[in-house]
Length: 77
Image (cartoon, rainbow, N blue to C red; front, side, top):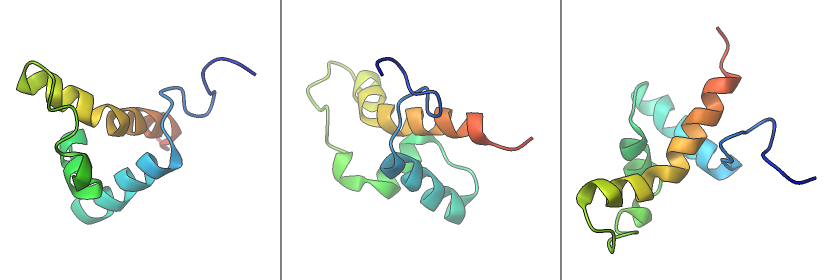
């Protein structure tokens, strides 16, 4: 079956969603950048070859941003 996943349309994995839940359990409110820095600090220097700090941050936090997006779809009203 090809195409996007129906349950996680942004394509996040259980690992990244686990990072999000672990950080939110402690902080209650966090940005994708904070989640990445706390949950996966080894990724902080990833994408250092990008031309601007903004592009570096965007590339570094893309996976956790996708996890946040997927989890918004699962949230209860």
